[in-house]
Amino acid sequence: MDWQEKDVLVIDEVSMLGARTLHAVNERLRRLRGSRQDFGGIPIVLFCGDFQQFRPVQRDNSFKAEQRHQHDKAHALWKRFTTVVMLDEQMRAAGDPELQRLLKRIRLGVQDRTDLNLLNSRNRWNLNMEASLAFRVQQRSTMRIFISEHKWKEELPTEEEAIMILNQGDDSAIPVPAVFMFVAGMPIVVNHNTHQGLKLVNGASYSAVEVIVDKAYPGHRISADMTIHFGPPAGCGAGEKARGNATTSAERCDPYGLYVQLSRCRTLDGIMLVSKVRDRDLVGNRVPEEMTAAQARLEVLSERTVEEALRWLDGDAEESRRPR
Image (tube, rainbow, N blue to C red):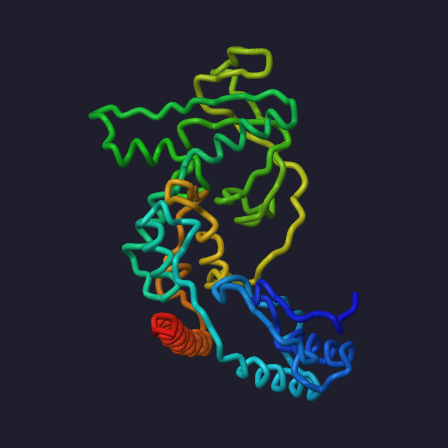
C-alpha cells in the first residue's frame, strides 16, 4: 500500500482507540509519508464511533515514563480535532420509544429504580427449562421431568406465590421448583450447600452425572427420549467441577458494558434476563466524571460545527439567489 497517495484516513470504533495506539499510528504515518505533520499530512482524518461502547483493551494501567510521554502527546493531538458532529439518535431502537428512553437515561447516568424495575420485568424465569430442552437435543440424550408435590391445604396460592414456585431461575429463596428437568451432563450451579463435608462452594459450576429416582415416584415414558415422574427425585449426583475463572469479590457491572449490552437490542421485548439485575449494577452506575466532561466538550464542539455549517450554507444559498 502506497500511503503517499492516500487523502483520507477513517478510524472506526474510536472508543477502543487508546492514546498510545493513536500515538503509534501518528508516528508510523509520519515515517511512511516522510512528513512531520500530524498523521503525515493526510488531508482528511475522520474518527467515528460511540464513546459509550467498550473501552480500549489495556493489560497494564501503570505507565512507564516513555509511555506516559506518548500518552500525553496523543492526548494533545486528540484535542486538535475541533470539527465534531454528534449523532444522538439511537437508530437500532428507533421502533421502541420506551427502550430509547431507557438507553438515553443510562447514557446520561440518571437511571433510577424505575428503570431497574422496568429491566427486571424482562426476567424470564423459564430460561433454565428452555436451556435443558436445548441441551438434550444437542447431546442427543434422554430427559427426566420431575413434577413437585407442592400442596396448599387451606387455600389456593396467591399469584405471587404461584409464580415463585414455578420459578426456574437460580433463586436460593426457592429451593424446590415446581418442575425439574434432568439431562445427564448438564451444567449446574450450587446455590445452597447443605452438606459442608462435600466441600462444595456456593456459586461453583459442576456437571450433573446422574439423578437418583425415588421409588415412590416411578417414571412414565412419554416418548423415546423423555420420562416423567409425578414427584421429586431422591437426589442428584454432580461430577467434575467446571473450569472457569473465579472472582475474589462481587464487583459492579462495568458502566460501558451495561450500555453496550442493552443497546444491542431493537426492542424491550427482545431483552431476556436469566436473573434479575442487581441494584448496584444499574442505580448510580455511571461512567467516570472525566469521561462525562470529555463528552460534554465534544457536544459543545458539535454545536459550534453545526452552527458554522449552517451559516456557510445560508451564505451560499444567499449568494446563489443574487442576480448575476
